[in-house]
Length: 264
Image 1 (cartoon, one colour):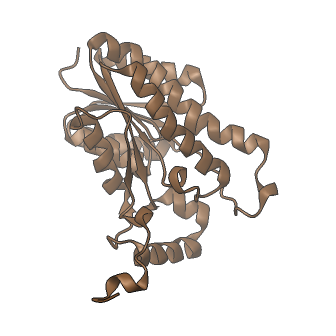
Image 2 (tube, one colour):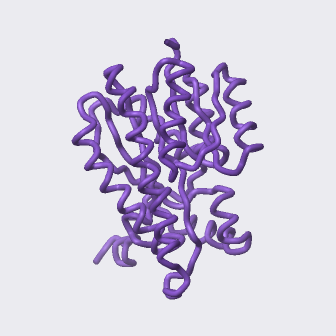
């Protein structure tokens, strides 16, 4: 059995997943880098992890495929003899304006749920026997503020993230006491994924408007969210079934004009 802890990070070729994998490597973990299509980026992320002293597995597989989930867990256990951490970061959406109800189909819903909800469940199920056997483990799901506010890249995506948030609570009951499971709920994040979906002009406009509205005046980077994901894995020893909003405070709304004055 490896002396180093072992982490699986789904959807870790780029963005938040890559940042989390690299951070875990820097903290002494061996890491499974998972991708669906971005092979070159996954290999680059793995190289950064190895530069920090980690051993890696680069695993191609769509988490909507249960065989891929079980195969990923088995590959980690066969190589290192343990699985300590899982980050469910893989996600899928279809960018669609909300008023355009005909813009999403039944198949769009099924495809999005297959990754964002079913895929996360299948990954939890795949790693659970290994974590239970060794007597400990921690899982964190990467969700979205859209699952709380209902406002996201599309209605199916927001609904899937709401389902993920609630599923975390359900799983917390049955995974305890050996395994903790929690969810991080980010607001807007500066990622290639979001820019690709929105287009450069809309993306830059969104960054500016969000930055102006945020109480903390900062739009999160992938590294910002990775830090919270890894904190849940390493340090939140008495927390399970929790969903933590990480959005620079936008969910609390803005104060009305009279609240900023000295008198009412």
